[in-house]
Image 1 (cartoon, rainbow, N blue to C red):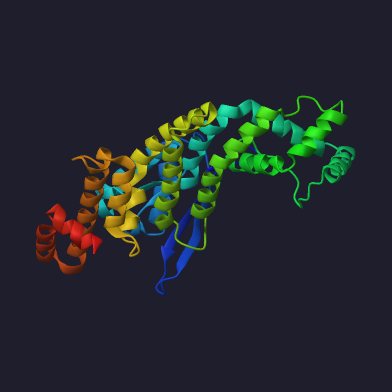
Image 2: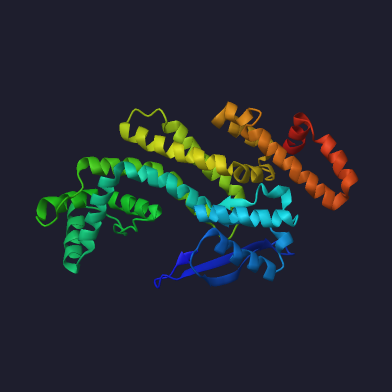
Amino acid sequence: MWSSNQNLGYMCITCHFIDNEWNMQKRIIRFTQVRTPHDSIALFNEIIKCIQDWQIEGKLFSITVDNASTNDSMVVELKGNLLGKLAMPCKGELFHFRCAAHIFNPIVQDGLSTIIAAISRIRESVKYVRASEAREQKFEEIIAQVGIVEEKRPSLDVSTRWNSTYLMLSSSLLFRRAFDSLDRFDPNFKDAPQFFDWENAEVLCKHLKVFYDATVVVSGTSYPTVTRYFHEFWKVKVMILNESNNEDDLVASLVSKMDTKFQKYWDLQFLQICVPVIFDPRFKLKFLEFRLKAGFGDKATGPNGYLPRIKRTVRTWFAEYSSQICGPSTTNSQEASTSGVNVAGSQFAD
């Protein structure tokens, strides 16, 4: 969903599927204006109509939406509708995928809030040198004088898009000496970034690079991204763990805020993040057990921990699939053979 510059609401629904030749396909199956109010019921009505028009109610595995409360409520309605028609695998436990890029956004925004003043001064500095041709020429002269050799110039961000803010900060840091020189020789250049602003921006960029690289990977369109989700999320987790005891006050504040948001979204999404790892022949269950035990300790292994829930989900899913392929009698024997944790663990980890 998004709004046009005429304040009209539009919905785009894209269908991702594997064709008979095992090629990934992506098609827009509905693009429509949605009348106000854009509440969960209105969104549900549009989506269920699209699903029914295409006759794919019994073929859906998941829906991916951005991180908005209205979408959460809409997915609850849609899931309930499809469950009532027995048209969902695994009782819909893996149905709701929250867009990875949108999950990274609130985590990063909390980090940005720790140096908002420095970001503002750097943003205004970039605006200043780009405001006129005369200023651009003067800035070019200063760049040459201080000996900076860079093809690209500092970019200006869109303040609501953290990745553009990261690119602005990282590109501006390369021209730090030029901005410092401009501050000395141009009396009209007000509120220039100070030494501590540049230092804080450098610290922030170091930590944001993990999120930026992860966003690039999970936003790919020419390959399946679901199997990459865990590994990119885990890089963020490792960064937070490594910096959790940092003695620098800025880093400590930055990481603490990120960790709180990370944990919130991990708890909401860990099944969708972890289950695909089991089906990747390069990793499987043993790899997942190793990672989760190292990263979460007892929260991973307890009776209601991450690993038991992941194993139950995979066993349920496997039993459902077996009943469709082989019939109920085979399903009962399969459930019996996978009822013990050790048996299931060895089967899925081999």
